[in-house]
Length: 235
Length: 302
Ligand SMILES: Nc1ncnc2c1ncn2[C@@H]1O[C@H](COP(=O)(O)OP(=O)(O)OP(=O)(O)O)[C@@H](O)[C@H]1O
Ligand SMILES: [Mg+2]
Image (cartoon, rainbow over all chains, first blue to last red; front, side, top):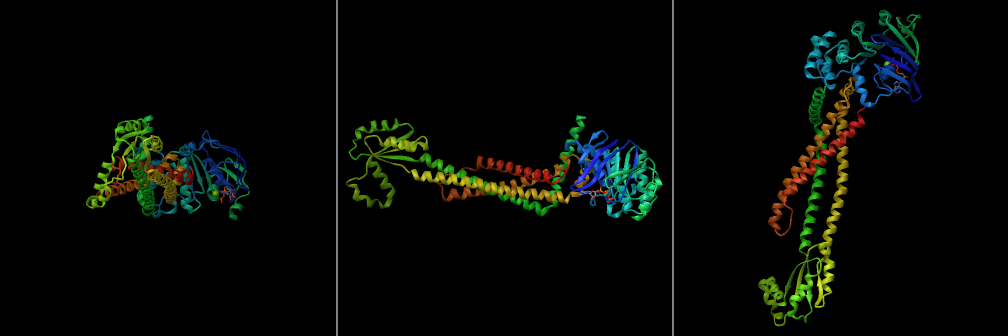
């Protein structure tokens, strides 16, 4: 589903990713961990072509992202739902409108939108907040709206960049459980996070990056491998 | 599949128009400034075009009226009048030919003097005027050639024609056209800057929306559509205003000028205005499209 081979990404002198080779199969759930500045966000950005690699190749759902022409980028992005730490909701639109927006701008027909929006809002447990504006919601609720938006187009891949970075314990768990639920329904999910208790508890595949290199790839692991939690405590 | 594509195109157009108009409304002041520059630019263009068109029309009319007056020798014997006219008519480029005898010429003078015709009594005894031939030319450009030809005829003493007036009018028209074109380019550049800046403002105001659109895979057409429509409408509204002002103003001008200067040849409002408004509309639309497309291209990354 996702294949990075010998991928490097530099910003001028800064080398954000250094000869990274990794692949993720269809239906996997992967945590991407590592210290700040390790290159986690950069790696996710390569997957939805927000950035292009300096070297190496990136293939997502059989699309060669590296050699993709500009015209085809929207096709890639419709296959990939992205969730951010800062939610990126539109303040002037209601919850319903925020979700409907992505369907409208990707050309979905109105009857489909009418059916689909309540469906995904129900999935994230926000059916009763349809008419609220983002500022009237808690952080956790806002993040769930952004997740409803990310899955509205039924993407096959979901990328989350520190989705719980701004949230309390309970809300964080809700978000992670939702991501796991999307995964159970067939989506391939990649989550970059510093949320070590959850990573430790969920025991999923963990890929650890440090200074742009993959230093660990456990099929089922915790936040910091064998040397339990001292890095996490340092944070 | 094809049916679905067409439906999507219509949704795209509908949404672009709706969003574009909404955006014009939302940026009231900036939109007004953009429309204002389009209007002013196109107005200046229109005024230049109108003045140039009318001047060249006046020049044409004057040119077609320009006559060569060929004066005969004082000794000219009128029995050769027919042959002389034949000779003149045989010169290429000659239009109409009229023989004016010295008596006719004196009569004309008398008419022009009107009530003060007494002044002429001194000359009436011994008419100092000469017989002459008034010659029009078929093509104003050949006037010198014709004049030269006429002056070679034996019985013709000298030839006169108002070369300078026409030539000066010509060069004024030319200069005016050149100045108009230069000024219009400057104004077009100003218009371009203002519209593209308005669009840039829209892009800034909608940056969050545009960001989401990019991330969820909206096509470039979907993102650019509303922006380009906004530019197009700014250009068209400006052109419409300019067209309205010009057609109202020109009709008014013609009316009042024809009262005070009835002999001045001016172009009628139709088809002049129809063509002019069409031209303004095309230029306005083109400028709007060009500048908004430029901004969209430049400031929205896909
Ligand atoms: N647009 C950019 N321009 C220049 N340097 C960048 C850019 N984006 C990232 N970097 C650099 O690349 C490196 C990796 O950044 P990245 O954002 O991928 O780290 P991260 O693992 O997501 O960190 P964090 O956990 O703090 O989010 C950092 O040194 C960062 O400064
Ligand atoms: Mg990051």
